[in-house]
Length: 478
Image (cartoon, rainbow, N blue to C red):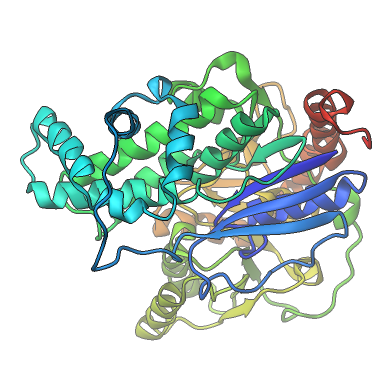
């Protein structure tokens, strides 16, 4: 079987939870051929693989969204009336009313002239109609350029040759979901969509905070990402979700409930049992650590502010930040400036490391994110018997406190998002109650063993792959 995994902004160029999940899946399914269809930002930002590709990953096909830009000069393209109508439906209609056969034929035909079309009279008139119907109070010129910014990358990613596979598996909606939907449509092969976080909600949070989107255009962009997510939900044969809350959100965003299958993440407890200390952290101290990418969505600043409060009562405590800090250099510099301005001591950024070598000496792990799905970092820490203090995002509360009927107890503490004081209080409490800290670590390991085993997670995906992309669809090696 040949499976095409479609990744946006992650594997193999960015380390992190989703990329680690992809690596684990490929390594575990040695009898499946994988091809990675990766959507990246620019060649400068994503030029090197962050993972050693397994032998069964046969190809990486990359689309760089930053490769093509608007030129200052463009050619006039005359569209036929029926082609103008195809363009109008793509831009203005609901996702279930788009004629995908005609749309893809149109994009393929004009793939070298997309900028010309978006700068042309037909697109201008379509946007003017939409502008007048919307009753927008924004300046039309700005409205028009926002539409160009939306639909150029959307159309551009569909101009290349389709990757051949027995099964397409997108790791998010958005552009990855669009690629999967269209490849499945063209090749007449099944399409699986897996969401770790809810793409639409994450983009909504990004847009609300973004400075490049002004005023009323924020809602315009949010609606655009809702629309392209809806396309993925409609086209997918199966949509997987990590936990019930995410499933509910997917249904609210238009995914048919009957398509959704719950498959939780999993880790190997054996891989994190009996770890040996490599003396990476100072002995005899209260060692706090976090495993993350130093990027805004992880909200490292709140963690640093919390640690400043902690140091007032626990001056010998250490904070180890384990994970890459080159993905968002500006944010990393802002974190360093915060440490220097507040004169916070005993904080160290270690970069990308083998976290297993650090875990035996970690007393408490932190997660301060403002958005998550079901973090592998928490599951790995729990498997290693380390308690957590985490923000109340994604499935973190269920992981640390258990679902109804769990009966195991607490594996850590949940605090509100962006609340440095609450995080600090939870950390201090943990240090002051070592017996409870140890008990929480034991509870975490038991919960992973009972509900989040790697073998269970892999078996469910193996069955899904076999059902959708097995012998009947051209593959016979699984």
